[in-house]
Image 1 (cartoon, protein in one colour):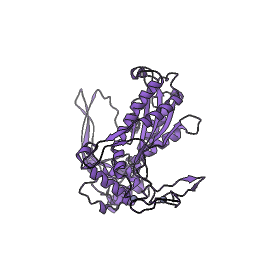
Image 2 (cartoon, rainbow, N blue to C red):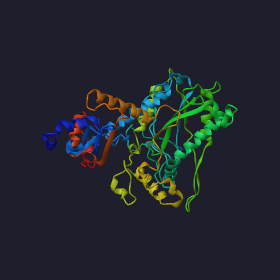
Image 3 (cartoon, helix red, strand yellow):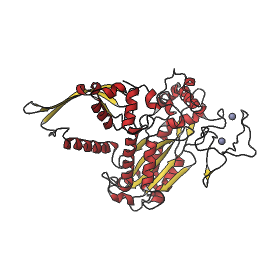
Length: 450
Ligand SMILES: [Zn+2]
Ligand SMILES: [Zn+2]
Ligand SMILES: [Zn+2]
C-alpha cells in the first residue's frame, strides 16, 4: 500500500482502478495501439501500456459470478435485467406492443431425492420442519421426522435427514441432464401448442413463435431448478402480434402438459440400472401482466438476481476441483462434499463420460448456462454491452481522450498480450477504499498479485 501510494504514477493507477468499476480481479494487458492514416502513412496517434503503472492496462474481469467479483457481477446483473425487461415491456428494439402478448413466468423444479430439512412459513412464522407423529426409522436407524422450526440461515437447511438414504446419484444425474430435459420440454411445448391450435409444427412456425428466457437456480439441497419467461409472439418474434388463438390459458395448458410429459434417461452402467428423470411435481405457472400481482419489474429483477449466482451458495467450491484433490481438506459440509464425491465417482464411468461430471463437480454436475434466451426473446447481451461501450467511447471522444477517426481512412494496428490478473494484497485494500467497498478478506487471500 505504501509503495503504491508513494508511486509517482499513483493518480494514473487510481484512475485505472476507477475505470474497472471496482473490479476485484482486473485483467492486466500489455500492448500498444497505433492509428495510421491509410493514404499518407502518417502516425496519427499511438498508445502504449509501457507508460502505464506497472506497464499494464487494467480491465474489468467481466465475470457474472458475484462470489468472484461483486462489481462485475453487478454489471452483468443489470444487463440481464434490462434484457429480460425488454422482452416484457419493450425497449432495446422490442416494440412496446409486446406487453399485449401472452406471457408466463414458469418455475420447473427438480424431483425429490430424499427428505431434507426445510423452512416453511405461515403468516410470517416458521413451521416445524418435518413433523411426523409415527415417524419410521430408516434402515440406518434415523427417525425420519424433524420438529425444529429452523431459522432462515441455519446451515442444516437443504441437508438430508439421513445422508445415507439420500439419492446422491439421482441428484447429480438430474443436474447433469437438466439442460437436456429443458430442451425436450421446449420441443414438447411447441408440439403441444401446435396441437392445441390444430396445426402442424411447420404451420405453427408460419403463425407463431414461442420465445424463452430462463435462468437456473440452485436450491439449498444442491439441485438446479429453472425459472423461465415464456411468451407467444407472431411468426417473426416480438415485432408481430401472435394469432388470436394464442392465449395465456392455451400456453399455460401446454406448459403443464409438456412439463409432465418429458423425461430424460441416464444410461445403465455395470452397477446401476438406467434412470428415467423428470421434473418435480411442483410446477409454478403465473401470468405476467402489467397491472397484475406479478409485475414485469419483479420478474426481470428475479431472473437477473439468479443470473449472478452459482453453486457456491449451496456451500460447494467456487472453482474446478481436481480429481486428485483431497476433498476432506476443503472444509466443506458433509452434504456438498458427498455431492462432489458422487460427481467424481460417476465421472469415472465410461457410460457417463459425455456428462463430464469430473470437470463440473464444483457445480454439482450442472454444466449448462445459467441464463439463456431463445433467438427472438429480446435483444442480446452483446448488443447491450455494445451500447455501453459506444457510450463510453462517445464520452472519451468528447473529453478529448480518444481522437475521432473515420474507420475507413485510418488503419488501426494493435497488439495486446495477457499479463496476468488480480490485485496484490495492498492494491486490493486501496482499490476497495477507492470504490467505496468495505475491504473484504476474500480479496486479500485469493492469490493476489500477478
Ligand atoms: Zn471484475
Ligand atoms: Zn429439520
Ligand atoms: Zn437412512
